[in-house]
Length: 340
Ligand SMILES: [Mn+2]
Image (cartoon, rainbow, N blue to C red; front, top):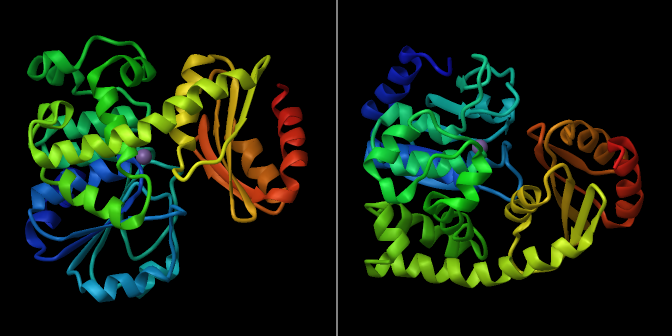
């Protein structure tokens, strides 16, 4: 099912009519690709990544007022506080695919409520129907095979091959490499990220980015390669930490690579429960992955709260954070709950 034709039309009309849209998006490839698609179609506006926590609180009201938009688009963010929505004086369109929320004063589009889950990028592509390659990249990044993949394959035969599962696309096709180029450009200092986002909105073709045929694409590739060196080292190290069906890897790095690492380590260790943990200040930030019977989110949500932290996300892919002092006990409780 997904969203209806009327839903897509409503979002498209909003993009056509506004003059100064503000896009608030999740700082992962799905969020960023959603933004790039809508921004390019609208050909106007400004984008702000929501980080480090994917939640829009009343604090964002100041950011909104600084810009003075006439429409707001929230992309791929699971948590938007009602107080923020109540404070808005212009229309707010919210596209998401996490657990459906009950909110007022917002035009809410969630691909889950209609019985199917499509990443936000896929909704964004179906809204604008242009720049299909960005739609593919954001969709695959969120562990999804977009419904338009056969059309994409005809248009870009070198970038795709028939695959049965999203990780095969992520780790076995050039689309997967594009996912990492985009993901790794979202790491690091805020000003670097903002520069990368600006450049990304101007890249014209997937080949430009993959082959670095322009100075701007070369810039993004260089940043990707720098982060990728760290990434490859961590993948190697992490594989030494598997204990039967449980893989816990703690690492320190100036880049936060946890969700990228947990995706690839689950792919390389099927049937495992994977936790990638990185200390940050007094907290332990974690990324969790499971497959098959290993629904990780419910145990994460419950046990993180019990240990003074928080957690949530998708059933098989979620994140969380707890005080460092409680980390060992949390892990012990989590393994018990997951029976691994
Ligand atoms: Mn997403």
